[in-house]
Image 1 (cartoon, rainbow, N blue to C red):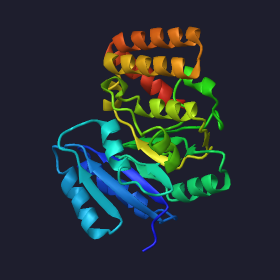
Image 2: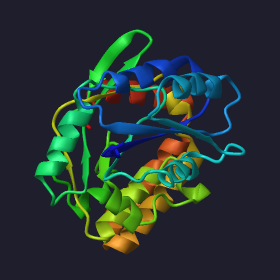
Image 3: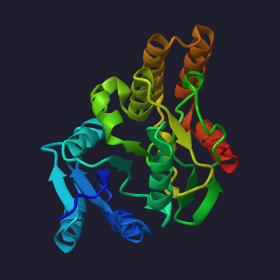
Image 4: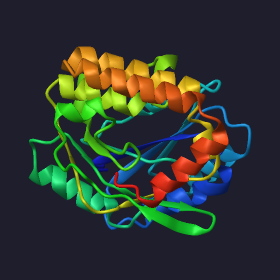
Length: 272
């Protein structure tokens, strides 16, 4: 049996109601030379049972588990232990990959060996359907983009496994929760790897009212810590770092209903 070229790593946690749709979107891909590595991170609903049903039905799914809830960075590293393919693609258990996603991403990486990362903008949707579409403002991000935020959307990315191995995967640190992707890209850029954003939405992200509740002060402080690491490793602007830190403390202390208002306004005009 020929080894597939792509490992799709998916950390799953309490996503029983959406996991079937997510997995079905993978089996609807125009490019099918992949395997799926699912890691259940201590779900308390029937996520594992849904995943097990798919694993029994499809011979290209490997289902593993964490002994307890460990967080996304640990969970994805657990998946990476079994990723022995040329490329590694991300996916979340409540999102949808559009049919041509893998085909277009792997063609790009095959034709552009100078890039190790490729990602795409996202479509944002909820129970009422699509409400916004992103756009890739910067196709070839330089290290300067780390002053402002992450250069790539995480869930739609495809990455050369070589780059993952060179940086030791995701950093396991509770201070990087929700910033694991920003830190990953930073580590790859320090090693000389670069990436590219396709200017086409090939991934749909489920975004709901609960999303903003996770962006609390703790999450904002994690963001400041991740940016501080990037400041040191990439020799970024101290002035822009201080501005970022101040804005995130303000946002973290902002009452939720006010943040909800500005969050909804931003999504209507999202350009990521």
